[in-house]
Length: 263
Image (tube, rainbow, N blue to C red; front, top):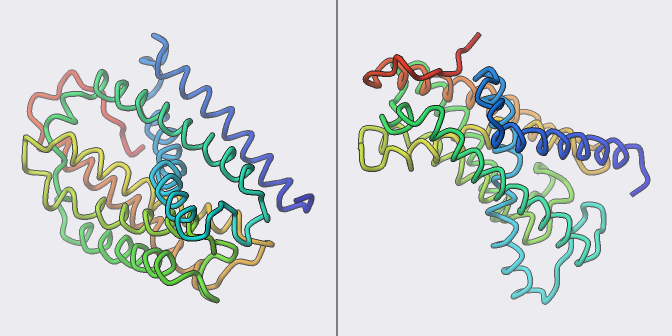
């Protein structure tokens, strides 16, 4: 736990916690409505991509691990005691819940008309194809590692049931994020659900690959994991921006809505 990698990882985690607190304040204060849309878009997307798999995967995975093994552990990742594992990831989960609620309320107030209009598929087929190849390839790898274990090709140290559940949830999010605009986007009754699924799926795919590389167990980066991240991250960013642009063009009467721009 005292290795340079863990010290750097803990420092980065503390910095991210501080940013999360600042983001939370911005989401509830009047001055937060004056923050440039692109900055909220980037910081909120980063928080979503990092915390969503933990929020969903850790509770489910912990229950499964308790049922199967009778206790919690971090597997080969840091050799954390069960109670330490529960406190750390439980804290991340509570942070995720708080930010999710605040982001939803903020987005509804600032961009409610855009969200209610329903997400639209990318206007260009090449954007859909590129997003599908990258995001679904990323999803396939995560689902394989989550179900069958990371083995030699996957993220080292992610061996416990709880951690593998996070990988599985990450894969499911990537698939759902890609399909939501194509299947649900044209339905007005499911507009908010489609927007949420697309947001979470694209953000998760974009962030989880690089995060896994930065926090690789013992600093050992899997070559295949590097390829998966290199394919998934740009594809998710491209697809998400293409969906946003298409939604922006198709949504009616959005003259009063400030929308994050690509620039």
